Image 1 (cartoon, each protein chain N blue to C red):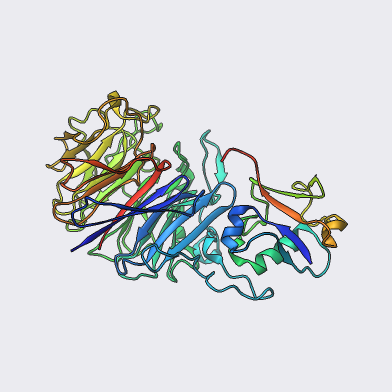
Image 2 (cartoon, helix red, strand yellow; image 1 turned 180 degrees about the vertical axis):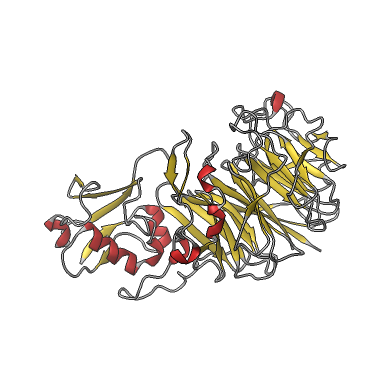
Length: 98
Length: 391
C-alpha cells in the first residue's frame, strides 16, 4: 500500500483524517499514485492536478524522503521507500501567502 | 412571519445570516468552508432550501458545494456516496472544461492578454452561480476565464454554452480582477432570454437559451480603456441589474459611468447625473419600485475606496440621473473599504431591505429601503458576495 499525506483542506474535502493509503498496480509513479488517489476520493479530482492536462496545480508540491519531487516527470518512479510504504508521499500546498 | 436569509461569501469562508421579518436580531452562522475563498452563494427560487456555492482556492482549484437544507449541511454534487476504490471516478462537479468540439463549431480558444497578445482560455474559478428560476437542478455558472456553463443535474456536471466565446472572444481582455463572467440575469418573462456581463468584454444577450449570443453594448463609451471608445466589445462592465416586472429595462455600473437601457440592451444611455463619482462595482434595483436604483460610488479605478472616506450608498428614485446620498448609520469618516460587484442585494419584504458587504468585513443592512443602516456583523473576512433570500 502507498501512504499519502494530504493537506488539511483536501483531507476535509475527502472526509478523511490523517494519512490515506491507496493500492497501485504496476510502477509506482506520481501519475499512478494520483490516479489511485482520485479513484478512491473522486472529489479530489481537479484539486491536485488539472482535470484535462493532468499537470500539477501551480501551488501544489510533492515531497517524499526529504526530497522535492514536484518537478520530476509524472512517470518517473517514486523512491523505493514510498513504493514499499516505508515513507509517505506528501502532497502539500505551496508556502505562498494564504 | 417571513424570514430573511443572507448568504455571505468571504475570502476565508461563507457565513449565513438569518433574521425574522423585522430584521433587527441577526443570527450569524459560520464559517462554512473555513479558509477557502467563497466567491458566491445563491439559493434557488424554485426551492429556497437548495443553495449552490462556489468554493475556490489558488492552491486546490474549484469546488462546487450544494445544500438541500438551507445551508445547514453541504455536499459536493455527485460525491455524496463514496465509491469503491476501483469504481470509475465520480465527483466531476468541479470539472469545467471549455468546449472545443467539432459539434459546437470549435469556438475561438484565445483572448487578449493585458499586453494585447493572444492567450489561450484557461479555467480559473467560478465567480457567479445563477440557479434557474423554475428548475432547482438547473444552474448556470459564470467563470474566469470568461465563459458560461450550465448544469442540469444539480451541479454534478457542467457543459459550456460555447458559442458565447466565439462572439469576438479574441478581443476580450482581463480587467484588474481577471477576465471573468460575473453577472447572469435570467428574464422572468422569457425563458429563452438571458443577459450576461464580462470584465472586460461587455454585455451579451441570448434569445435562444444560450445557443447563440450577441453583444449588446451600443452606447457604452470607454474613452481611456479601448482604442475605439465605441467598440462593439471590450468594455469593462462591472455589474448589471434588472427589476423582474420590467425585464427590458437594465441598469449598469460600468468601470466608469452608470448606464441604463430601455430596450433590453439594444442601446444604452448614461444616467450618472449628480453622483460624486461614477466609478463603482455593484448596482441594485428596489424590490417594489422599478425606478429606484442603488449604487456605491468608489473614488476611482485605482483608488478603490469611497470618496472622502465616507461610505455612502446613492439612491435614485427616477431611474437615474438624480441621486441622493444615504448615510445614516454608515461610517462618514476614515472609511476606506470597497464594495465588490456581487456584494449588494435586496430582499422582497415591504419595506424593501438592502444589504451590502465590504472588503473590511462589515455587512450592512437597511430594513427601510436605504434610509437607515446598521451593521449586521462587523468583523468578517473581506466580503466577496452577498445574496438574500426572502423566505
